[in-house]
Image (tube, rainbow, N blue to C red; front, side, top):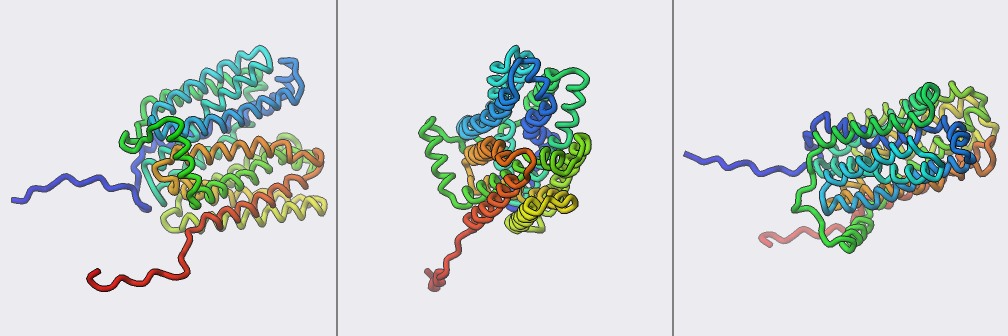
Length: 419
């Protein structure tokens, strides 16, 4: 009688199903959406906050910059830290910090306190962003990772749709402080969800040790990999094109094209729905289309839309063409974001936390730098936005080419028989 031996665990492959519970995938998606919600929901309240706290418009704008800097710093700290201590504890600690900072934002007596609390809110909120990606990479590879990252993108894309609308409704009915109470309540629910469903996905055998020196060493290893650095920059530069649109669209659609605030909100929401749809298509087709092929198509779409918007800006911004190129940009981004992220983090290997940290930090640092640049030529010109998009598209294509696997022009000769 033969004795069967227990099957050995099979590591995830390009077509493996990671079997993450649906509720955990939704939770990870919501954790990545908290920061965009915190960015978008309070935008309609800028004049109200300035009047209430006795500060200027630039003083209120600084609270946004503080959040973006906090998101960047938080990812650089939490991502590498999670490679050494695991994912679950930093995720829970970051969520608690985000909750406490949101409460302080709601109670802030001055713009200085609000700015400091927004920075801490960003640091804590970074945990959900950086660790959601790392958890996916811990449990899956290839098409499976691309599919789940695409789902996270879909959930995250809902935030720009509902954020301004929900924030406007809350501010109108209850004032600007209620926005931060809402965010605090949402984060508290996320903490309970993480406590219940977020298991540890980083085995102790894979964890790094050695403190700061090990973190620096891991960063060197990850950044030295062409596949990681190239795909990471591809994602971040594509994000620059989108952030240029986000920063400039209120002026382009309202000041230049003459749409009302309500119509602008509808157009913005429809464009956010477009990226949500194409992200879903990319996730659904992960087993049939290559990730690099989808990124290539998306980057070409970004370039076409950027050049089209540049032509519109130089020729008087025709209405229909501008709206069409905005929609094309969003559609193209849906094929880039999830796939480029998956390719980058797969290349990061056992240092997925560090890889996710550099990806996220670069993303938000560039966003913080770009935000004021789109208005360099005034509030009635779309030219800076279009130029930034064109530069970002060209650089993204260059980064994507840099990430391509190198093939030897002289293949190695076959081994002799019996060697």
